[in-house]
Image (cartoon, rainbow, N blue to C red; front, side, top):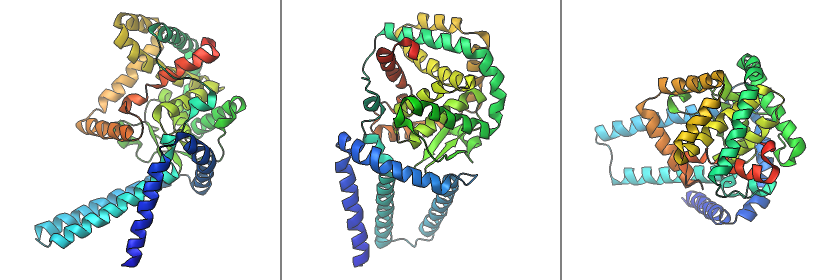
Length: 359
């Protein structure tokens, strides 16, 4: 009995300590995000990166199967009237212990990165509100980049069918970026196709990071032109940029630095969609005028992606979106899923500091 109480005390002290520590972003940045976490993440990638399949996905699958089995046993006991007050108390206690342990492990392995200063502080850029004119200037550059890259990116696109080409390209992008900004150094690759890619089409995700194994998973069944930016985004998570807008910005900087036109096209493709969302709310006529400036093949890519999403739309996706939005809000991202598109604020801030041509 004393041993169980000791475990509870240790977990409670750790959880309280984590919560208290998370209130001090400067300390999180200095002692965790740029000191302890890099050691943890590199160790994870060394341990699991060489394995050709996703260890994290296998872990998730085992957990889901175990939960289903536990639920079956619970329902069976209820039906057989074998539950009593002590049974429910023991179940609540065990569930609380597991939840507390997962909370502590999640934050120690990665989750504290939600509370760091992050990439804006590292690059010395100020992210704040932007004007309509600033957004329009950024969109003009995005349209120009998309139209310019269209032909060469399309010629390189089929090569991305080989996942080794896709993943090597993303790693090389970060290597190039590291030459300009050393904070983006990426060692020991661990990027893999998701074992649940097909399921992801119906759940609405193109990639995800597993904090328990340190692996970056990519949904490799979505349209090819989406995959390069997604891969760079997930590596951004591996580097400790937990918030989605930060991972998007890290992914943008990496893909933009790539020698491969398909990577640069992929990131500008996503950024145009994000920026158009905001301009549509400000001036729908002007948003439509930007659409008209896109080359026909670029428009076809947006149509293809729209049809792909529409084909896989289902009631479960809306529930998952809502739950994921709540998860993001609980982790320092009050805008929920809109946090992804907040990368435009970062892009405008970057243009302010380095000039529009640097986009």
